[in-house]
Length: 444
Image (cartoon, rainbow, N blue to C red):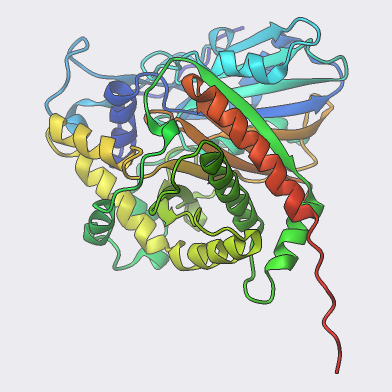
């Protein structure tokens, strides 16, 4: 199969540099986003998948990029002046792989093994794996992409582009260099100053048991939450709060962390901050592949015992804290830090992406469309995970499909037991929400 040539050399943006630097020197090869999509039916051949990837992704420039640091591996004095994206061959033979699992092999265990393999920016930056044999009635694909290539929204846009029944329209999908402030100019006007974010960053988050240590192994699993459970939880929060489905997912995570910490006999932290990524694309950038993302930092009310009250508090926190101006300033701050001399840049980036600043990440993934299929095989659902596997040790992602949600749980291998306990607690939280019944209000 002929290779597709990539673009010429281009400088990266400040946000790209910050993420790339973090991947190169703070977390080599493991700053990755992953999306697992399940399908009904028998799997296509890996050659059929490669052919589809070339047709649907062949003109996406970022997928042909790799990181080039001049100086044969020497650390550059200043990141922004010396780090480049370099166009390379679109090598589907190496980047798209097929695996035939032995019958009855747990899919979660095999995916965990694949996630333990680094995806270096300097080599490929992404991989797509076709997984079959574990079940005679279904198969899966796993997309692993380094955050330096693109953000999680881009990953789901690529999945959508790959699986849409209609052939995508002609034209290139590009990610022109833009600052976070330019991504949503109306909403971020007057928010360029990073100092409010810097003051907030100085208030540390409590480090939890899963924030210690780092290994090369990974543990990945997921917990399903039905549309009925989500609806019951939202009804239970009324009329005091108008909770969203994402608020429900956050409340379930908060309850599971609370239960697991108490079961271990550890004290509940006074301050537990989570990071929630925000899509910063403007209207003219809706289809752009790249890093157009920032985040907000929210306290998680793990000290609140009542489940419904905890959901109401989270609903209020997300409504007050989902400030796009804060997110814009946070992205600008990362870009500013990337311009500093390397030791200071790495120290600043390490803090803003560390467990001392954010204990865990909770990412809301764009919904999967029921119309998607892989060469005629319909989608059954999906699960995923954000980056942040450096000192965080445990991260979450929420993937909606047909009104239900799948909570993806990704953990460092050394915290497998803790993550397994969290998953059991997640299931109990979901079951408890599903049992909520709202009493009718008597009419006087």
